[in-house]
Amino acid sequence: MGDPIPDRRLPRLLIVLGVLLMLVSAAGITGSRVLLHRYTGSIDQQPLLGDAAAPHVSIDGPLNLLLVGIDERDDDPDGEHNADSIMIAHIPASHDAAYLVSVPRDSYVSIPAFSKSGFDGGWDKINAAFPDGYRNGTGRAGGFELLALTIERLTGISFNGGAIVDFAGFKSLVAALGGVDMCVDEKTVSVHIGHDARGQYRMPYDMTDAGPIPVPGVTPQVYEPGCQHLADWQALDYVRQRELLPDGDYGRQRHQQQFLKAVLKQATGSGVLTNPAKLDQVLRAAGQAMTFDGGGLSVPDWLFALRDVRSGAVTMLKTNGGTFNSEMINGKATEILSDTSLQLFAAVREDTVPSFVVAHPDWVSNDDA
Image 1 (cartoon, rainbow, N blue to C red):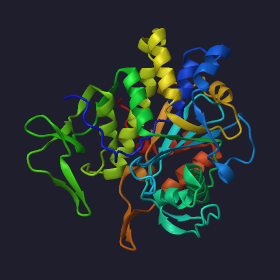
Image 2: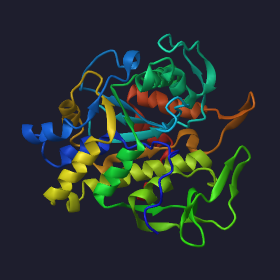
Image 3: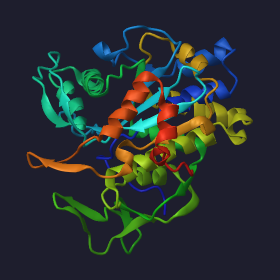
Image 4: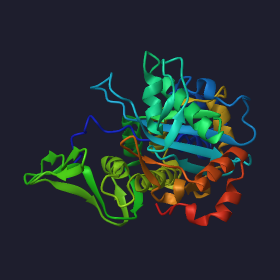
């Protein structure tokens, strides 16, 4: 099956900033000003954090990055821009490891008032913070700032940097890698990609308020358990799925975390690092994949700070232990963050995540990828 016709409603999925930063460091180019400028100069750098930035600008000590993927549609510029993927990347003070913590997008939280967009504040799902901050001309920077402020109110975590990554960037990076090797951990049926009896691309399900309804005569794309090579469009489709997974959004979070680690592992493998032409292609694709706010620090500062983090030192953690803690509030299905989840966020804030992991080993995601 070839590359299917892209759905314009595809959510803009997340690539962790560290894929670029660690990759450039691992490539051993940080000592070359020419190469450093070539790759970091391609990154779209804009202020995103605003008042949510950490009060002290320093590359020393623990670092926290807010990483966001948004559902931004080119054919509907005035539509809602929900935060489809929300992840905190925590780098301990030793700068030799990374911890990825996904925030469930249905988490029920208090969103602070935001005068820049005219938002009065209130309780809602956390992914609503982005459109609440986006309105009245503030755009993506306003949405990102309000989301960061919401997380800070919830967790006490302030951010040293942040990034937004879109679908085009995701796909171009994986295409530059020649696809990605992943271990599918459960049978995953796509609600977005399928084909009819003639082999033509068709949406296999109609998305309704009651859930996905199969379209007669359309066979969906299915990802069977096992280690396999995924093309760029397959990887994107696989990590989007949540509607038909037993654990829903928690399963999608796990798959996204596994994907991020798989991309980092593959991008820093010998097949890329020893091939100058491919390395150049991958680095340029990675640099063009994001909008980045360094929190007052330069990209080279971030590169040097993360140079010792490798794929084997990346730990993925499950909010709410990866299980549902649902509650209907005002007719909406929401997720309530457990006391242990709040302890996890406190560990990120206080740079004591290794102690949390020792106490809660079952909160570490399966990292087969």
